[in-house]
Length: 68
Image (cartoon, rainbow, N blue to C red; front, top):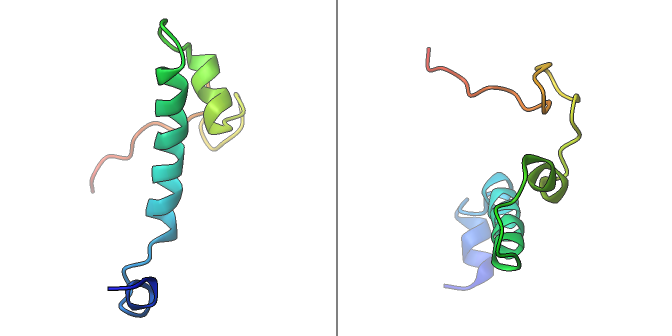
């Protein structure tokens, strides 16, 4: 099954691919150090700007959604 079949069948998911890219970047950073990554370093890797977003928490990251 080639790439065209994935796209044609609706299996192409930009959100999932973006999440995989972010996980890959974090895992690469973890592999490159012997120490734990600080929250600031993780935010930097993920492109998170502290204080920006819909939640005014200390890192600007929204809390998880609760199921309705």
